[in-house]
Length: 413
Ligand SMILES: Cc1cc2nc3c(=O)[nH]c(=O)nc-3n(C[C@H](O)[C@H](O)[C@H](O)COP(=O)(O)OP(=O)(O)OC[C@H]3O[C@@H](n4cnc5c(N)ncnc54)[C@H](O)[C@@H]3O)c2cc1C
Ligand code: HEM
Figure 1 (tube, rainbow, N blue to C red):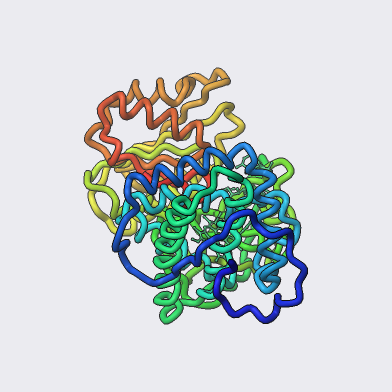
Figure 2 (figure 1 turned 60 degrees about the vertical axis):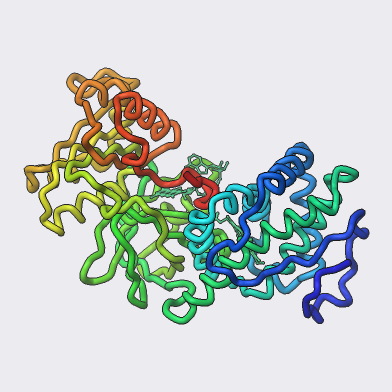
């Protein structure tokens, strides 16, 4: 059985072999909350089926996209032309659907963000049944005999709940905001060590909060959206400055660092992320930044200055070598202007008098921090190590704020 959906354009497209088990229709009704959250049994069924298909995830991903693009060629242009690096972004999240549905409050919050953000891909409500159909068909094929009607029903319910929230969030958003914001590069400066500061000015008003991140599409890699964090609090002229580090073999980062020039136009997606000043309950902040993780922290510091609220801000820059200490002069200048800002370095792999030490050791030395809100930004290992040190030192986990390490929605609390 196929999902009921109008798809005249794909009627003549040859399809891969039929699926071994029937897949029920996915309901994409539009609840704002999940009326009937999944039962423990349904969650168990979904988890068990994921563990069956997980060893075959690579093949299943190829199959999923093959049938999606064969049955619904109209969705192909939304995805990057060469899918290799990105293959699996969508399917990977679909396989973690239980994480989304498990907790209704998070479901509405995260899937709302996700639905609004999907507008930048050109996703429409009628595409959801198509993706649901191909998801279930792929699961059925790769789960083989383990696939049952009960499992299919549990997946249908979970997908329907997530899709429903995404669709209604996107529809509401459509009434008030564009899907993407073209923005012209107005300034570009190299900071050495493969890092460039790129300032763009959106053509339309772009509202975001200091500490959030933004997805960016460049003209050189269409459909390759990557996240970058503005390094400034909102400015009167609406411009945003990104700190971009070119990663080895990286597509978008190298284009931004080595090709972007004044006059080029990039696209911005919706701002995302909760690492904002409003999340703090304490007036004193501990900020820890590594590499270009300094960008959102710098924005937060500017925001504290802009508001003129009484905060003490302790900022630690964690790096392996002194050469990686980029942006330090700028931050030191800020600390000279603002008496409430203290900057310290933690250089782990090189002897530099006064700032040698691993980040956990340095944090412990200057702590305790249990009466601070903590903002962490940088490589995943650094964030994890700092989180461990701080929680051991008594900082409650809900006072520690950081961005997701990879795909936003996969890092639910
Ligand atoms: C919430 C969030 C905020 C971010 N903010 C910033 C920011 O302000 N500045 C910034 O420069 N980057 C930031 N990033 C990282 C950025 O989104 C991209 O992942 C990075 O620029 C690489 O993209 P690419 O297209 O060049 O690499 P891809 O083409 O995606 O990857 C190519 C290769 O590089 C590897 N790779 C990908 N990312 C990294 C990495 N970070 N370090 C080492 N190897 C990597 C991949 O595994 C792959 O092998 C942020 C990421 C997230 C999730
Ligand atoms: C319940 C339904 C869905 C969920 C949970 C979901 C989730 C996700 C997630 C988490 C990402 C990665 C985002 C990122 O890394 O920034 C993604 C990417 C994407 N999704 Fe969805 N999605 C859903 C439905 C759809 C539908 C219906 C379409 C339209 C056909 C779609 C098109 C895309 C595209 C084009 C990408 C980018 C892929 C890439 O860059 O490789 N998604 N999705």
